[in-house]
Picture 1 (spheres, helix red, strand yellow):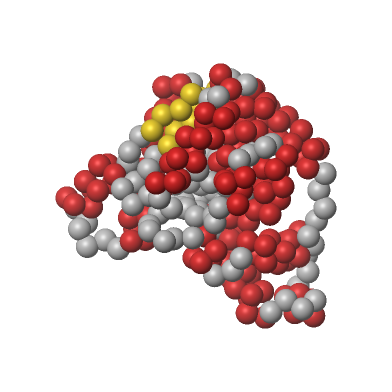
Picture 2: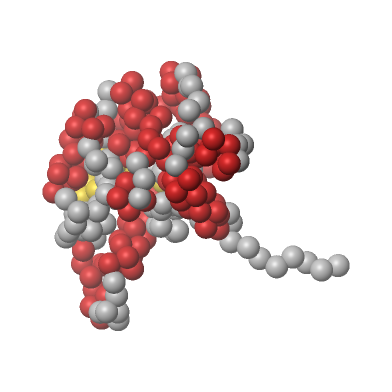
Length: 257
């Protein structure tokens, strides 16, 4: 894995956040707080950059959400001293499926939850004159572990260049609560769901393979020779390739002259 100077990275992110706000003509940021490490780090960086008075947190639990997720998100918001709000998304999500798609499976409902949260954030961004800060990390973005126009929808991604394992190191420097750093990562979209179970690989291993494939430009065969299991390398490569459409603007036809 690459070796980063994390203090320098934090400084770079602060500059990036300031530039994005200046370019858009905004001074406030709104962030969806899940109780997880990525949103915690994003919020802490925002506070460090523009001050707690300009950062707004939103918790958006669903009926099946883990109670401790909301508790951790509230704890973080209070620790950072930011204004926050809790908006229950269950009525909005359930009403649609009850009325129109009662046979929908769990994945469709999970995607609807993510997109409902996006709608809430963007409505509040208009009310608060704030930019929506994304909370995705590089690991998730590279394998498409996000809902298109859901949690992937934002004005900018402050930690989108950092792998999950690197986000953990930044979290330690920013004094993110230990219980948030240590918890098992989950999108909390259904009971018992965890990121690593859904991905089928640990973040530590995922980060290493992604780094060598994408940043270091090594081939799959080179990774096999380095000792990585063929099944793991092929899994990560497949996740990367099949999610390419999520990393691009929607395509449109070209003018024929």
